Image (tube, rainbow, N blue to C red; front, side):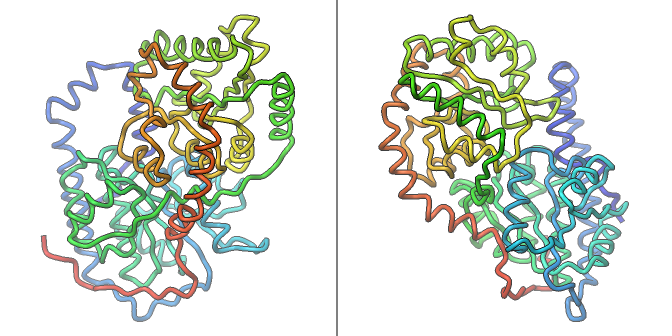
Length: 460
């Protein structure tokens, strides 16, 4: 039986990968020597053998779930709440199954005390995975959930840690074969996904439990599996805004500057999403972000709110925003605000709903922004960001590549054009939003849905 992967994709991607930027030679040797691929191949083969062994004995006939009990397989069991995007998706699941203040019988898989503590702070239970795939499934079935959600997001893209991606998919598949109502919530599939992951998708118990959040990934997976998964929008669109003391303070700051005739632009840059080395962040990203803020406020018609969305130590947005704020001129600083508190997803959505425009490199901040009917300029060019904007049928002008952000002399003009077009953009977003919310709800399992399973794994 294959041992459980020793680390979650979240730990690898959000921790080790971020740290490895400090040692580019080690990273180059790990990737280009072939050692990374050989290690993945060995781990994957063991995991696939275990999957087939356990699937052979799956039997849903006698399964008796606890009615209404929800189990979540998070993208990062080590951290559990590894980002505001993750938390927003958990909240959407909770609100779907436990309405009107009902006590949430919701358990999240976690393999660390830190992750368990974060779940406990939300009054959610945790369960520890076993040492092997089979042990893990046995433990989870002992919980007797009626519903299981594998929260997909970036963890299933086939690049970050594809063996851990396979482990999560195999776990969800085995639970489904045992009789648990199962959904893999909206994820994206990279063009260069690990080849072994294709075998997993082809052998899954049908595509109807898979939710893909962008049209490009949907086409890739449909071709791969020979049947179409669900095309959805990101689950985090369902997060509801909530006013708090912190959001009211932000609203008061915005109101003060609007009384001066200024529009308010939210600005968010992240060292992780730009995929830059620490030296590039220091020498390029931070000065460029500071320059943009200075230029926007200089003419007297714009105020800028520096809005963090990720607070994890190694990839916190504050690693960019704090030095940006510290280096501003005195004249600019009086018209640039900076939120320093760690916000909740509901607070973020409340704040972005009051902005005129948001410029961000964070996908889930863009989701909160568009979900609040506020126009956004999104920095990045990968399929998941393009798919997000395509859902709203927004023009190419709403996308800015990292290279353009760092080097274009027309960047301020791009932002000002975005501000000039906010009425049209807001109307377009509002027109599309009801359909997007329906697509987001398609991630969720209806309470009267029955599972249909095919017992045998397809031969590879």
